[in-house]
Image 1 (tube, rainbow, N blue to C red):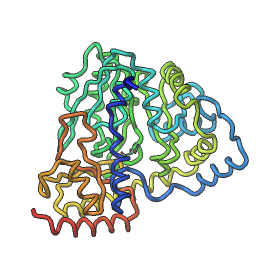
Image 2 (cartoon, rainbow, N blue to C red; image 1 turned 60 degrees about the horizontal axis):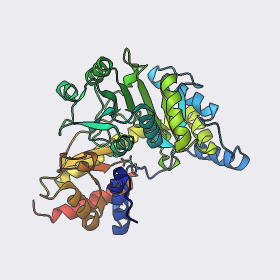
Image 3 (tube, rainbow, N blue to C red; image 1 turned 90 degrees about the vertical axis):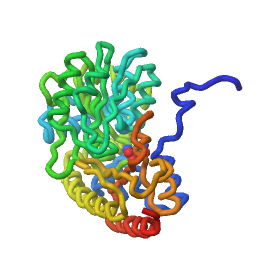
Image 4 (spheres, rainbow, N blue to C red; image 1 turned 90 degrees about the horizontal axis):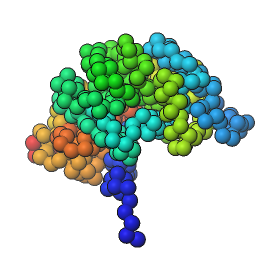
Length: 389
Ligand code: GLN
């Protein structure tokens, strides 16, 4: 047929995470690419979900989520961030943070609106915005510090700005936005009367005493922000795809209109398992942060010893490292070769930029068992020992 597709998707490649995981599998490589833990989260959460699978309910739950989970999500925000949400009208349960992001974008951005993203950006933001015909303006954070400067905000914000998407702690480079950066964002969002979609999926994964502060907690921001979370990240259950979005009732109401035609709802057994987790298993999440901090240190030392220039990681599952001491290849070619020939997979940072991003940085995931990281360390040592410097 001569018919064309929606170019947003017709011209799009497969997400880098799937590409690199497939190559890792084919090559028998240790997969430090796609960010998923290799140890499943708490048994009690899985037991509760299994119980519900057997005993029910197993039919469509309410469209906006089961009341038990909505209440647990609201309590979680109150406990950790002092934010208060009405579970009935200000919390929406989604099938993962990805759906929460897409539903929020569909609901808040109209065709022709300008939407700002901050690159490096999670790879779903731009296509979701383009699919609703929003005009995307990107701020490009610069290595090695990836700091948000006021000049960059001043350049992209305008009276046409409908919304901004922020992600802190930031995948892929592990930055946690400072109070000063949050205040700048708040000032611009208020000046231009814009919404902010806050992707906070790594909210508990902050290291070295850094603190995650939701933008929504700053003065005047409660009414214009939505805050997105992911149970997959909190409880190392990434395959469950249980997420949520919290915000003022009018915004959650319209986001629910998008959600009702994206997925309508999320499996009830998983919702009740996560409700149990948020109520009884938060120590798991806090211990995970400590374990990952130590993994980060181990992997950073390993990478430095292998010849990478390791950047600091203040949060998330990830550490970013420069490759120029090891190769002149692009980050993507390098990742493919290291996966195929070195037996360790990573993600090229340029995948988080539409264009013009750095091509000398790669991302490694450290949300893995220590013995897996040790295996990767041996492979990296062997592989780079024989490389020309
Ligand atoms: N967020 C994960 C990462 O950055 C991947 C999620 C996915 O594969 N869709 O690695």
